[in-house]
Picture 1: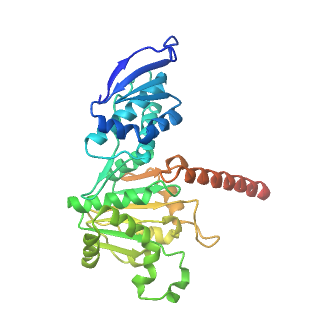
Picture 2: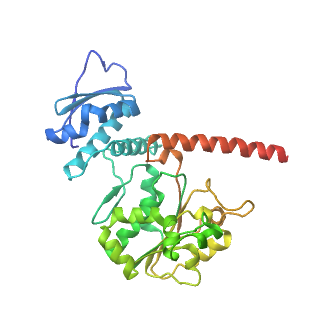
Picture 3: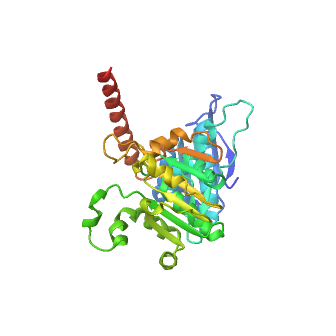
Length: 351
């Protein structure tokens, strides 16, 4: 344990009930302790809010009181974040949120009474020379692990859950390791439709606006000059889905983003491009389909047809996995609940 734990009693937090806990965590490095607690103890306040505990800073120590389960979750959260600081990392609000989610999930997974409570948090991570990304939700953790073990991974769910960002990070990691020779990033240019020809510039300039999120993720993982050189050399290729037809993609990490906007034939075409020593990642949000009415999404169909196929992993993100502004998760829930009601009303009218 990074923080030294001292159990004590307090008139404000008596230990009489069997389901309450009260202890003191002391961290040796004063500077790290200050960063851990946050400016004006904002990280401790976040712990109190999320876990319904009491966390009071006293110098380089923190007094934690509350339910046995949640105080242990707080301890594991603080120990993990302190270790992150010791390794040269930083602690932002999003890091605290992620560590809390993982601590809670670790307890939720302990369904058998004989299982020991986890003493330390372990989170999957993706590392490149420029950046290390650590899972911030249990689903992100499962996604990263699926990317490591499976040749074809589907990451589906709402915006803001890190599906595309983690996929690009994993591809960059594979390229740096020498596990693949190139990265291929693709999206269907559905938003442009037949209007591509009316946009100014050559084909690259026409489609770049639709591929911008992939560029942004790449520049986060790899220094900009190296990205530019790799694109020029063809080591990194960014192209619309239509450019994949007729190719066999071998020794590559291939990502199809916004896959909900593929047709059935496009999805089949893309998936059958998989060549030797290739890894393929398909991301999308089935709730944001921009295809013409009556056209079935290739992503929705693929998820149905390929569920349970050996070598394929399907990871489904939920609104609780949103790691952008907390308001984004609430927006997603509001829209999803409204659409669910509308769908139910449509079915009842058809009956």
